[in-house]
Image (cartoon, rainbow, N blue to C red; front, side, top):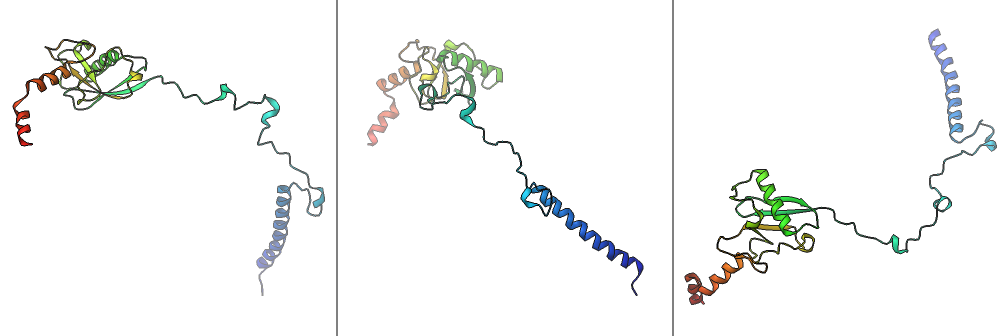
Length: 196
């Protein structure tokens, strides 16, 4: 014999199924913008916002072939340069403008070197006592009036001038030392010629 709770549960279950089906039908119609199950012909269209605006209606037409629309590379505002000072462990990074000269880079690198407290400590931080080279293997120093943007490199080597070398615009003390060594000839170079 079934208990009265089970009978009530079955009755409520059948009513619950009708309600569930009715709610699903209402939800489906609301999704499709309909108002009733039997009246599918009276569906309304949803007003949706435009996702792609009409580009030509509000503004003027932009001609991409016009000269003012052509690609122009961005102008450089700052340069990040690496300057290795002779005897130091690593390079100094200097941020400067592209219109700066080699002499400006030398003084900025020396200021940054002393500010960071690098070793070895320099005897002087006067820019006139140093030459800037492309690398430690480059014999000629760069002209002090030359612009940094025209050099074509971002890595440089800074070395102190020799005490006996007189400063000239065309050559540095390093190249004069190399010329002097090749003219006088060192004993080991003569020995290398014998081995050939």
